Image (cartoon, rainbow, N blue to C red; front, side, top):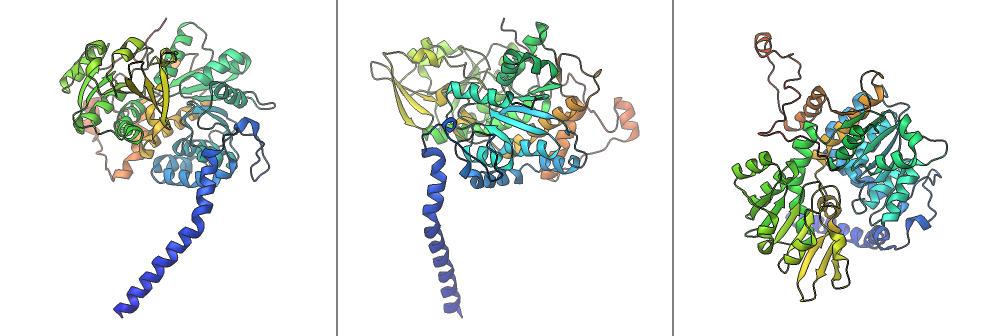
Length: 492
């Protein structure tokens, strides 16, 4: 019996091996089609299985692979799927024409398909030239979403894709979902008539939020906008926990670096900086922080990090990581003073934090090491390792946790629903934070994943605290942290 059982197991293993070998070439060829074909998608004529050509992706044949990626993400985004199931019967976004500009990953695909299930028509493009997952973009195009994005776009491609999303005959957007403000800026500048008719803007990045506040201050924001970036569910989960895990993933994939004993400076101690510092410290890195805000600086000190100026420590650092949302945080002067082998990268949304333009000069040599990894070589032979050309490290060079992005995506979906269905008198032409009650609802949708059970206030307790038993449980100014930093920085 034992011999027969062993032979049966061996036969099964052999059959699996044969199956793998038989299909390996087919899988390999199909998968590499997406990355190896150097032809620009703009020069291709592609059609999905429904006969539509209203999209531009790297390779529509990759749709099946992308669908598997989306299905994996859905497994850890149960709260967003739950919202989809609860609301799809009511179709709260029926009639909404959403133009979106976000990272196009498996997780954002789950958000886009949720919006479609809730009744919206969507046209989508990428907010970063390196973060698009080509297979996922193909899957969205196959499903009928008009998506214009591929990994490795040029600057011209980037703006062309945005324009193709907005400028469609017979279709006019009435909602904007943005990440970074580039889409909003493009519509505002190029299509002012469209901008004035938009019902609302949802923005999730610090860069885009700054732009919205500046438009509002100048009296040029003619539609209501929702600042999702400073919602509690975005700040405390996506910015903190997501970056705490993905910073390590991005650095490991690109450089194979060991963190123990490395000297690291993190520029900025907001939620992203806090997450990065926490992860690096846990693996034995010696971390210091730069800050402009005394409250954040004091938090860093109390968490055990030295707060210094970059020019005081730049010569000793093994890694320099920016997390500020500002510009020229790392200048050419800093880069000139770095030691050989220093790793430089950015965890902020925009590519302005590191002065990469100053490195594109005749005396410096650029050497591509691997995807998104460059050696910048000085005349004396010194090399600085620059990741993703100064763009967002985690989404350019790695992937991010689906569960955390489920929180952000659910927040974005609810913000769109709120702005689209709100009476005209509810929101003026200004920038608003997500209502606290909505933040709490997003959090509650994710608690079943942990089998968490909330305690309920008694009538006496609720009266004593002056609270509604069903929430909200904190005032709007409560930020779930030791210090509160105002979200608006005026760069004028």
